[in-house]
Every structure is written in C-alpha cells, then in structure tokens.
Length: 97
Image 1 (cartoon, rainbow, N blue to C red):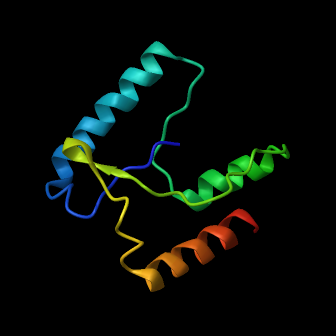
Image 2: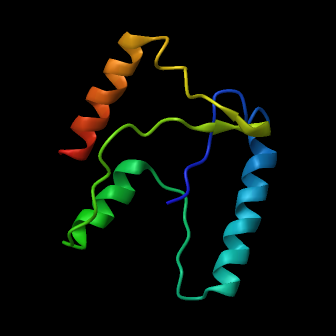
C-alpha cells in the first residue's frame, strides 16, 4: 500500500495522476507479477483479510510524521490533547476491528 495525499498538496490533480500513472506503468513493466491499482483503504484491507493470514500489529502512536524539508509534527498532538485523544481512540478501533 502506498498512500497518497496531504493537506495542501495535489492542487493540480491531472498532473499528479499522470505522474502516478507513469509510476504504475513502470512498476508493472519491471515487476510483471505485480498488480498496481488505485484503490481505497477499505478495498486494500478487505483483500488482506481475504488472505486469511495473521498480520503483525502496531502498538502505540502512529505519529510523529514528517512534512517536506524535514519538518516533523512531533508536538502537534501534544498541544492539542483532545485531538490526540481522538486519534488514539480511532487508531485503537482501527487496529481492533
């Protein structure tokens, strides 16, 4: 899974999709057994569940994360405790479905 998107990027969707399409074509050319497609998280995780395997579980927060130019959002949720609480609760629910 390669997630795409951000808060303030992809203002010119056509250019972005052309670039992504080129990467998809390149990946499938070099790895003919690989199938690359646009999808949703729900479709991806259903396909994983259909494999009926046990997968490792991540425990703990999924932050910090990085923006361009090595800008890390390590304090974002610590200064917004309600947001951090919602994030942790949603992460817990997601992992335990």
